[in-house]
Amino acid sequence: MQNYLLKNISVVNENNISQKDVYIKKGRIEKIENEINVKEKVAEINSEGKHLFPGAIDDQVHFREPGLTHKANIYTESKAAVAGGVTSFMEMPNTIPNALTEELLEEKYSIAKRDSLANYSFFMGVSNTNADEVLKMNKRKKEVCGVKIFMGSSTGNMLVDSEPALHKIFSESELLIATHCEDEKIIKENYRNLKSVKPILSPSDHPVIRNVDACYASSSFAASLARKYNSRLHILHITTEKELELFSNEVPLKEKRITAEVCVHHLHFTSDDYEKLGYLIKCNPAIKAAENKQALWKGLLDNRLDVIATDHAPHTIEEKQGPYEHAHAGLPLVQHPLLIMLKYYKEGKISLEKIAEKMSHAVADCFRIKDRGYIREGYFADLVIVDLNESTTVTKENILYKCGWSPVEGATFPAAIKNTFVNGNCVYGNSMFHESVKGERLLFTNE
Image (tube, rainbow, N blue to C red; front, side, top):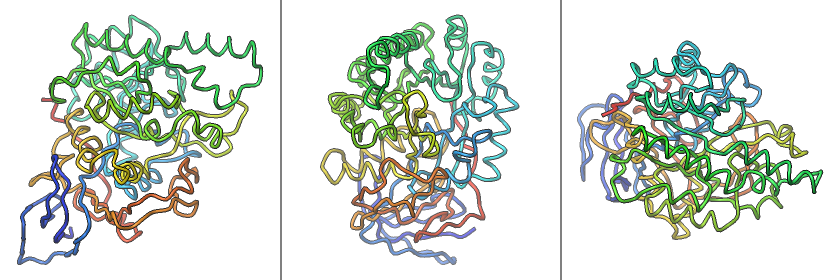
């Protein structure tokens, strides 16, 4: 394994930025000091003027393998991830077949072990009838990131609407419970009411159908179950101002039992963007009116929202076309979340330290990931070198998603990802990939 010495780099870590040398040895961070000189052979990278971030950890992606590989697969999407500075991901169970058994879950781990350039974990899926299978994961809580409950329907027909099943999982699961929260009854009623007066729907109708009430009703129900049973609940992709009242910033993240995620597209787009982008930004839960985006930013910065993710959910461009009922919901985003957030840093909306916290530190703390998420001696060297003096324009030619498109195509971001290290391996550098060494399975302390 190649060892590296990063010289004169600005380390963004734990609410601090300081110029250091960083020595990477045998896959881990060996030393962080003002000046390091080593006798053994290393690859030295002069990083003056650049910044070093802990690799981003994306706690919600859909890489579509197995069964939906015409959209994406673990190899292609992990490659896009590392090009964007995402060194670890947690993938959702709504593949085909759905990951509803221990055996099917392990098949996904086997694919990732063979193909993934990034580190990986996979959620165990919950259905109305597989509670006993889900609870087998209690004995494997150091090997699996969590269980996923779709409390609102999305891609994959995995809606869980059985209250006995929900109570059983919330009362007995020792793993983190991640939820997609939208109330199906409210969504169906909104759809019927709108169709009765507007037979042909448009993209801007999506947040009317999947509205604030649908999100809040489901999120508040999930939170009530978590409070009743003292479960570890993580509510994914919060989109509304109203839901923020469900979350606290009064205790440190490591002490929270109920945590929340916000996605980059809900921080970046508003319902005004449907006019230009149409169904390309159709996703569940929906991108909503601008006041919600403003509230999400406030909630992120005051720590009611704990982590930033992508909910990377690729579909082919043909699948994204109308009519409303045909256009699939989901956006491909895992190559660009760090660049999107660095845009907002340049605009003065968020600090570099807060970006590192919300995309790395807090994800590691929330999921209790072992030895990752921070730039610390002894931790795995999952690292990203960023140049804030360059820019990156997203073009069809440099989009790495298998689906071949991006909702941010044409945008220019005021930063560039120069190198991405995964377990000390420089997997991406100078726009080239080094794929001989694959990522590793994430492990969890659950302490």
